Length: 335
Image (cartoon, rainbow, N blue to C red; front, side, top):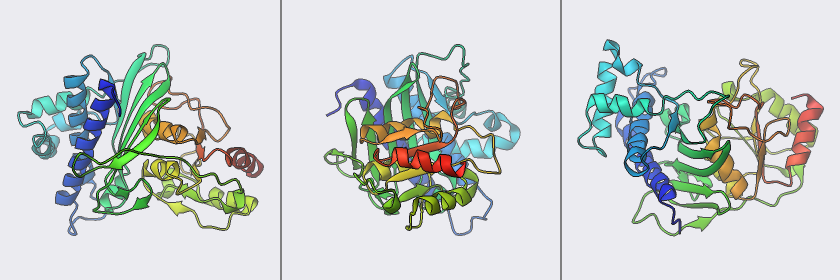
């Protein structure tokens, strides 16, 4: 179905990486893990970024990658044990990988593009989006997007704990979601023989704001839950918001199992700007499924300004018909 070599590479890399992330989770997230121990997701982040960087280097030579992680900490004496674990997992897909190569692969994504001279084309990766979802064994995603001249043209989400791009199913076959500009958004099972047939995604046609199903982040640090409550009251929304970790929310919205996705500004981080890897893949999935995504002021997301969406404030994604009513509601409550 997808005849482009770069699309095929992205799909294959995300599939491999998401299945590897699930293996890291299965082996390292144990009942003995302390509440504040994030070491499993750290290992997973590094391993996934190394594998995706290796695949891009192999199959798309010369491609540039902007990822979330840097290997700086792994090169320090206190990072030796973590690097050993990361290398152990990377070798499941790259048997000849050395610790030195693993660090080099991770640092392929440690590029800091300047707003005045960004690369014309690059990939951006969130190796494990949804730290706490990963640790709770619920929703997380591997998110890879391609940006060309500030526009997202390819988006791939690997969601190991999401079934049919719409419902939570920990330990199931997962979902692989792909969007290509002008070619729609599609999903197939993440695992299984050949992945199965590609099935098209389409947002809901709900137009009544009062009956909207709102998706939001689980972590309060990532959004303003009080303002979401005020917005719901203003619009007469009675259904409780559905909390979901990671860009799995974007897949759910694209499948029509939700209508609105909000990332309001947390009072704890009033000046926070979204990172490009947190939005690139998911934003294209939304629009190619027929939805709409902007910031909270209705501005298009600008991916041409470096590692952050510095020209934007928060995120509003909807099925389309609900976008203007939601923007009006946000303005009314001063969000």
